[in-house]
Image 1 (cartoon, rainbow, N blue to C red):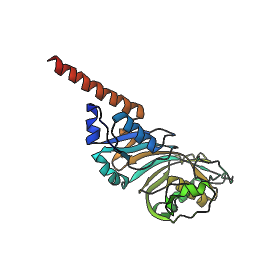
Image 2 (cartoon, helix red, strand yellow):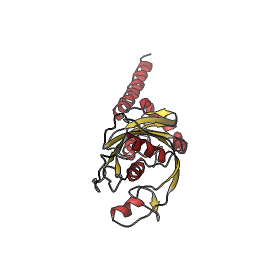
Image 3 (cartoon, rainbow, N blue to C red):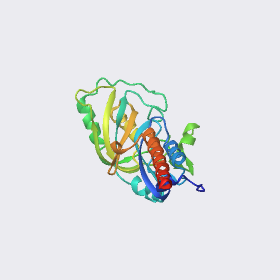
Image 4 (cartoon, one colour):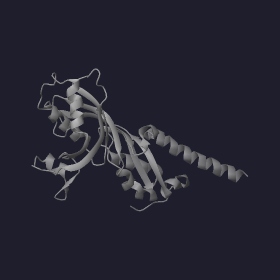
Amino acid sequence: MRQKPIHPAMQPFLDGQVILLDKPLHWTSFDAVKKIRILTGVSKVGHAGTLDPLATGLLIICTGAFTKRINTFMAQIKEYTGSFELGATTPTYDLESTPENIKDYQHITKEDLIAATKAFTGEIFQTPPIHSAIKKNGKPAYLAARKGEEIKLDPRKITIEAFEVTDIDPIQLPTVHFRVVCTTGTYIRTLANDFGAHLQTGGYLSSLRRTRIGEFTVDQALSIEQFEKKIKAMKEAFHRNQGEQHAQ
């Protein structure tokens, strides 16, 4: 993509910046990248790890020369919080599709939940969801999945460093709130599905928020609205300084 002339105040973004955004619900990660391109005028922009539209939280966006750092950020440990719903499954393992296969969950105890988290802690093999962008025969798997075609993805080795139920006392079934610390390549919606399968109740991801990537936390991130105000302030400051220089 050819770089067009930009506002002089946006030069730092052309040189290279790391932007920490708190991605809104229903936005795709590319929506956020596109918004940064529009606001800064910089064409070379990328993100360091996709967040699904139904997820919120920390999205690292790099501009200019700093896009070379994307792979470094993608490889870092990530932390998520969110919730699973027990008692059903969905084809996509989240609320992008309708719950089905309804099962009873009333018998599940606090001890059952704790034992299930331990079963998925450490180095494990996880099969990515077929409704994902992982390539199969050169094409994203979700394209075949949407057509109803049978597709099989190979398990991948991941590490879940921490997995805890955060509303354990008392438990609030069918909702299970959690915190997960994991390596890159981990699908939290697959974890939700596997967690439900382990309990024999079924389960799917009902909410997800990324709270940390490496040393960066979502508390440091700006909302889209805050970033827009920052850009406006940078441009206004530039014009104010230009005016002062002409007045001297």
